[in-house]
Length: 118
Image (cartoon, rainbow, N blue to C red):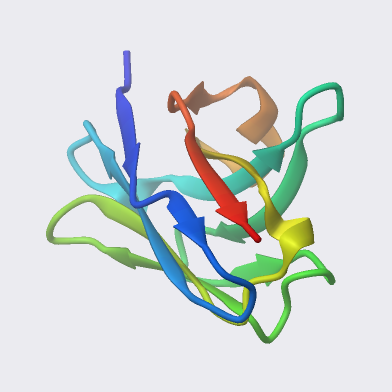
């Protein structure tokens, strides 16, 4: 069983920045694919960014150029640096981890951290 603990959410004005963190209880995050998803009440969960075991990254078109996904592999921690935030970025943000990126939806999930942009 893998535990993921997110932090860093909060309220910010449009144009501001936040950095989300996700600490993973695994021996080495480098062995996994990790990602950030977001979801608003009543809506489907949306993929925001992924980072694969080889370090390659992907982003949703809506966040390209504004968000950056990264890892501190010594700390087994995933980050999401969010800049130039917009009101439409308001959502609950979730961290997920799986053995492969194709398995993220059935992997382990954190409890979520709320981001509110006004």
